[in-house]
Amino acid sequence: MTRIDRRALFTSGAAAALLAATGAALADTPRQGGILRLAVPRDGGLMDQVARGAVFDTLMEIGPDGSLRPELASRWSSSPDARVWQFDIRADVTFHDGTPVRAADVAASLLGSDIGDGAAQIDILSPGSIQIVLGASNPHLPYLLADGRFAIAAGGETSGDLSAANGTGCYRVERARSGRDFRAARVRGHYKSGQAGWVDTVELIVIPDATVRAEALRDGYVDVAALPAPEGLISRGSFHYHPSVDDMALAARRDVGMPRTIGTRSALDDGRIAERWWRL
Image 1 (cartoon, rainbow, N blue to C red):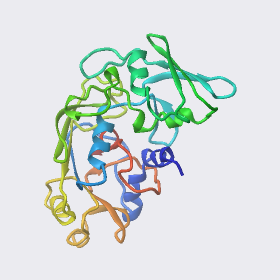
Image 2: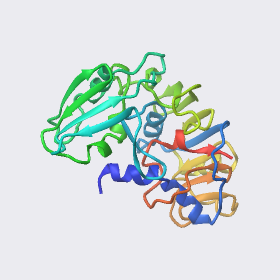
Image 3: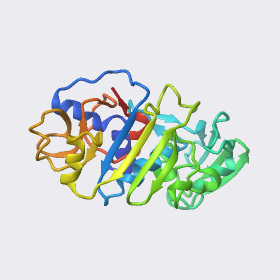
Image 4: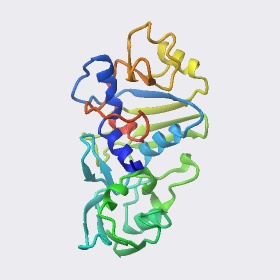
């Protein structure tokens, strides 16, 4: 299974397997407001993955229902042999600094990326349209471009210091300290308002020790803990566990809402937590 397949499973709600594991029911309708605090280990890249997902968008995305849909693209088409692709860029989207998204930014972000066989040619057709010419046919290119590796940033600057990140995501960086913590605030008037980006603030905190992560969740310092030590949590009986109590990859407070569609892959293998989860 490819990486994009894992993304699709998660964005369709893999973490919602928490519901199946506990038999609990959460409110179907997301609520806006509040803070979502997530404790992650130092290793594994979860902090960077979730943070980047909060700040950056891609041309395409896999929706909460598991379907492919445009994100920064407004529409797309391909040649009959799926080798030449055209993507039109949404005209109503700006970067966090207020500048509009242009085809040049998209081309610069994708340039040098491992698209298809790595031999892709990217041409700017107009200020709002790009063309991608692949070295070989690939009918799955739109799914590939939904992967976080193909994030779009102003001038193509998607790597490096997140504190200076200028993306189009639902959240704007307030603080980013590598290996320590990350904080971002919801962008007011975002083009996804009413559809994603429910909490006002997202905080990621690196806590290397699994036992300490569990304690932070148990004592209410965080709302979600990745790979926590289960001792001291199960006896409390007030958390959701994914994928199960016996195989706990993630634990969350019961006042954390998430997509209901159930997937089977591990939690946190995607960066969409910030814009898709909410507080009850």
